[in-house]
Structures are given as C-alpha cells and as structure tokens.
Amino acid sequence: MIPMTFTGKPSLGALFYSITVFLHPVLSAQYTTSGSETPHDNTQNCTCYVVGSGANADQPAYFQYYRFFDFRNLADNADQYVQAPPLLNTSQEAASASVWDANILNSDAWKTDWNIQNWSKPATSDFPTPMTNSFANVYIQQNADGGDDFTFLTLRTSRLNDSQTAAEIENEQKNLMHVTMRMHARVVGSKGAVAGFFTFFDDSNESDIEILTRDPKTTIRYTNQPAVDKSGNEVASASVAPQNLASWDQWQTHRIDWLDKNSFWYLNGKEVAANTYSVPRKPSGLTINMWSDGGEWSGNMEQGGSAEFQIQWIEMAFNTSGPVGGPKGKRDVEVLQKRKKSKGCEVVCKIDDVEKMGTPDIVSVNYSMAGSVSVSWGLLAIVTLVSFFTSM
Ligand SMILES: *[C@@H]1O[C@H](CO)[C@@H](O)[C@H](O)[C@H]1NC(C)=O
Ligand SMILES: *[C@@H]1O[C@H](CO)[C@@H](O)[C@H](O)[C@H]1NC(C)=O
Ligand SMILES: *[C@@H]1O[C@H](CO)[C@@H](O)[C@H](O)[C@H]1NC(C)=O
Ligand SMILES: *[C@@H]1O[C@H](CO)[C@@H](O)[C@H](O)[C@H]1NC(C)=O
Ligand SMILES: *[C@@H]1O[C@H](CO)[C@@H](O)[C@H](O)[C@H]1NC(C)=O
Ligand SMILES: *[C@@H]1O[C@H](CO)[C@@H](O)[C@H](O)[C@H]1NC(C)=O
Image 1 (tube, rainbow, N blue to C red):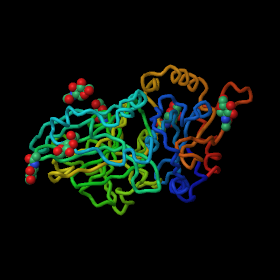
Image 2: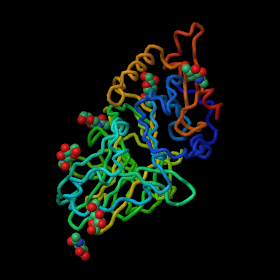
Image 3: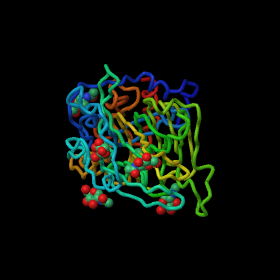
Image 4: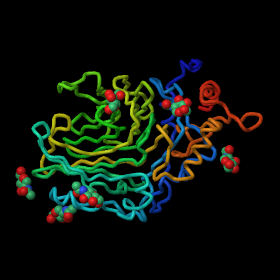
C-alpha cells in the first residue's frame, strides 16, 4: 500500500516541468549513445529511478534502468542542417535512398540505440495510398529561429501523386516491461499525417501517442491497441482524444507511463488521459513514426504535401523482461544488472525536476549499517516516499 500522506498537494507533474530548464549545450557534432550508460546516467550512483505517476502524477513508480537520447547537440556550426533535405520524388527513390547525415545516422553510436526502417506496404481498399518508409526521411535539422542553437531529429512523410513516403525508427531495447517514456517534440506540415510515439510488441500489445495533422492542434490521440475488434468495429474504450491541450505544433513534452495494469498519458507533466483497456502485457520496444496511407485514421494527404515530426530528446526509465543486455548486450551493463539484482535499490534517483535535464538526481540513499544489504524493492515505496516528495 502506498501511504497517502501527500494527497492534497498540487500536481507535482506540473511542477516538474515548469521548473525544468532546458539547457542547450555547446555545439559539438556527436551523437552519444546512451548504451554506454555513463554520459547522462550516473548509474554508478543510481540503482533505481522513481517518478510521480498515476492520475495526479503523485504515485511513485520505480524503474531499474534509465536512458536519455539527446538530439539537441549534433551540429558542427550554425549553418549546418538548417535546410531540410529535398523531398523524395518517386517511391523507387524512397526505397533505395540512403540516409542523410550519415556521419550521425550511420554511426555505431546511433546504431547501438536506433534502427531506421525501410519497409513498404501496398495499397488496400481501406488504405488506398501505398506507403514506403525511407531512410532519407530521417534527418537532423538545426533550429533556424535565430539566437537559439539546437538541433533535433526529424521524421518526414510526403505525398507523391501515386504513393506516400514515410519514416520510422525503432529503439534497440526490445524488452521493455513497463516504462515511463517522454519526448520533447512538435509536429508541423500538411494534413493527413500521423506522428506516432508508442510501445510495440504486436497489434494487441501497443500503447500509443498519436498526433494526427488533420486534427485540431490542441487534440491528441491516446490509444491502447487493439482499437478495432475482430469483426472490424471500433472499440470505443481503446482511444481517448482530449481537446484544448497545449498545441502540438509547438515544442511540448509528451509522455506515456506503461505500468502493470494502467496506462497514463501526460502533456508537460500533467495527466491528460488514462486507460485500463488492453494495457500491454508483452515485452515491447519503443517505435517512432511519421506516416499516412490515405485511410480513415490518417486521412489523405494532398499531392505534393509533406509533414514533419521533430524531436529534441527522448527520455525513458524502464524495467525489462529479462537481462537488460543493453543495446548489443554490453558486458558492463550485464555486470551492473547483477549488482542491482543482488543489492536491491540502494540509491534512489529521480528524473523529473532535476538540476540538469537528462541527468538523474539522487533523492535517497538506503545503505544498511553493514553496507552490504540494501532496502528491498518491496519496502522501497515507504522508505523513499518521504525524501522523494520533500525534495520537491
Ligand atoms: C557517485 O559515485 C562515485 C563513484 O562511486 C563517488 O565517487 C561519488 O561520490 C558518488 N556521488 C554521489 C553524489 O554520491
Ligand atoms: C520495476 O522493477 C522493480 C523491481 O522488480 C519493481 O519493484 C517495480 O515495481 C517495477 N516497476 C514497474 C513500474 O513495474
Ligand atoms: C527531387 O526533384 C527535385 C527537382 O528535380 C530535385 O531538386 C531534388 O533533389 C529531388 N529529390 C531527391 C531526393 O533527389
Ligand atoms: C532495406 O535496407 C536494407 C539495408 O540497407 C537493404 O538490405 C534492403 O534491401 C532494404 N529493403 C528494401 C525493401 O528496400
Ligand atoms: C502530380 O499531379 C499534379 C496534379 O494533381 C500534376 O500537376 C503534377 O504534374 C503531377 N506530378 C507528377 C510527377 O506526375
Ligand atoms: C498481447 O499478446 C498476447 C499474445 O499475442 C495476446 O494474447 C494478448 O491478448 C495481447 N494483449 C494483451 C493486452 O495482453
């Protein structure tokens, strides 16, 4: 049972984000894989991560692992990446095109974390526009607003006369088993596209944030799949579409908490949707995409249209269904895993309302007197709550 001593406090989630300062580090053209665990994650110190989850973002949820994927810091100079690459002209070109910005998007560091997709699907009667995912629809861009230097990752979809080009990337950590995952992102461009940020195992174990460019800019779709039953009818409880949200064409922080029996969705730290329908039960990966197929959900994009899904950073704290393995099964990660397993959670860290975005801060240390046995996960909730919430 979780003690209820902190009910009545204002939304902590709202506080987290209003206080957070987004630092734009000095420009340096390198993507740093989070697979190494060290750059943003002081794991030597943190043995678990606590977030305020639930309907008011005030129920503690604990996770064993943490990653911060930072796309803000990838340019060599102020003029780089300010222009989006040219649109693809044919579906053949889309299928065979290689990736832009290969120094980053083909680097070992990148590939340790991400896999850019190039699958296609044909037209059907329900989804009349054939679609080709292209490596060339994933690229780096630099903020051109002036005075504020940062880069971001873009996934683009564009409409040709006879087909759609699209973009998708998958995270290499495929065995997430509960996660809080966030992105700082915006969506711009033509109507008829879907920007998706979701957990995926299969069509009935999938938890989505979807921004439909045909929707009002203040509406976002939050869905647990399947949204359609076996006879093809819509499942009303699968999807919610709150209105009057902060506009998705501006930079916002979007978040899904996939927990044991609940899904919660947040925008800028405030809960905006919840569901207990079809909460995924299978180990899943994180997928991000930008697409359209002319169907009822995406709508039909006008010929010559295009839309962009732009992401500054992605953050996640998660458990896994087995050994974390790390992207590519890094040895040091496995050693770490063993250490965590044998010792429980000694050093509890938070990831929201931290001194530096992407670097967890310690909220409590639970070394035993002997220094060998720490507090068990079961007792953790009670022991750490006080320090977690008083540290706000
Ligand atoms: C984190 O761990 C390192 C190495 O174990 C130690 O030197 C450092 O003091 C620790 N930092 C904190 C804040 O506990
Ligand atoms: C993550 O794993 C720890 C250790 O098993 C457990 O105590 C915690 O409740 C798990 N978190 C979620 C959200 O499932
Ligand atoms: C598509 O065609 C335009 C006009 O000819 C050209 O400028 C552009 O580079 C082409 N796109 C690609 C990806 O080659
Ligand atoms: C996708 O890319 C891979 C790796 O570059 C390539 O081997 C494969 O043929 C491509 N698939 C399609 C359908 O174009
Ligand atoms: C695509 O269709 C538009 C009109 O719908 C036409 O003006 C344009 O020339 C077509 N482009 C190509 C490459 O066929
Ligand atoms: C998850 O996948 C399994 C196996 O495919 C399926 O039986 C189950 O209905 C799916 N969805 C949920 C929420 O468990």
